[in-house]
Length: 63
Image (tube, rainbow, N blue to C red):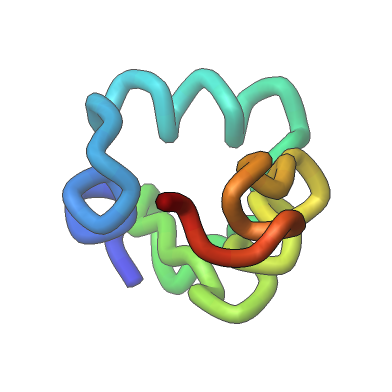
């Protein structure tokens, strides 16, 4: 998946994706030359580490 597609999927800027990749946060691989791709499953797993359940998710339905 390209950085643009990943950014659109997560609702962030492509520059944010670049920053996370450069910090070593996002798993990325180079296909050829400067072409960088991301494994969606690995990226979703990384993002899941930061997910916090909303109160309504853990307490049942909201009235």
